[in-house]
Length: 96
Image 1: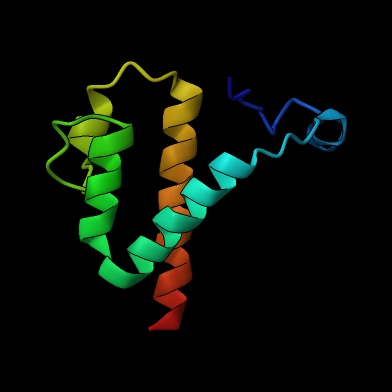
Image 2: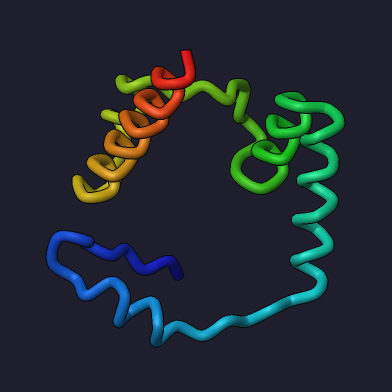
């Protein structure tokens, strides 16, 4: 299970240092295959992987704010998604 860290309150470095690393060769091979497929076929490969691993009903890779707002995600997660989106936008805006 993924543990969410609140970087405003948690001692993130201490928590990260305590984590263990588990390597699984089968998983690594699967991930390598997915990455190679995405490099070759782009969004179509991403969509196929989303259907395979997330939901067979996925029909788009685009998620808009209205759709995110309808989720039952904790506010901390929604805030992190929005922060990430704004950081990506700012990064790419500097490249223009």
